[in-house]
Image 1 (spheres, rainbow, N blue to C red):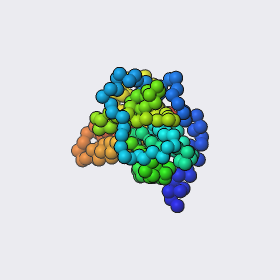
Image 2: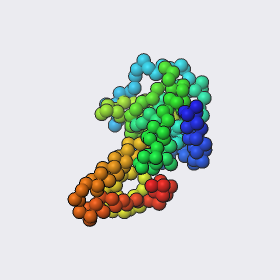
Image 3: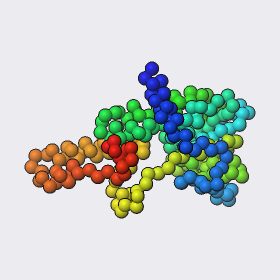
Image 4: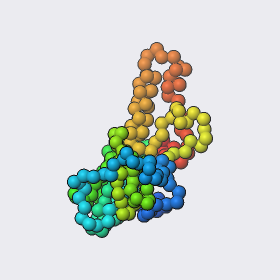
Length: 232
């Protein structure tokens, strides 16, 4: 019941994000971090070959990313029409509007994430597969995606390709943001912020620490005034 409620909340919210791209085929402008390649540059990247996933003869749908767009598509897609491969650095979808609550302890990290196989149970079937890896290039001519995991490069063939790799947070051009701040777009980042807050509060409470040092430890600067920044 809890899982069903969580999934329902996630996808009611996801319906507000219809602008998230669900693109079949290759767009003219590639998303950040994903570039086209020619066959000469991937001579050392072998074609992904394994007994699993099995092939049923149906078209192979490859989905890049498990964020809002990718998770919504995987939830809605009819797995009887495609064999599905998911390529993502994480095996879950994060309900990003609540990440700020995990930073301050209001919610535990597992309360704002849903495993991708809970979103699409058909991913457990042998013809489907989730590859925890990073997609780094796409070759539309060969209809292949190059990915890397643990330093190993490989290529995954596709018939249909969904690119839902998301975006990166903006620094607004403010000097020092990249070097000295924590971004908040995933669970491990929320946990890092929470750990830093707890650590600084503990240090500030040490008897005998000068007032100015305490104030420095407890000063918090938030870059950005959107929903996440305001909730923090």
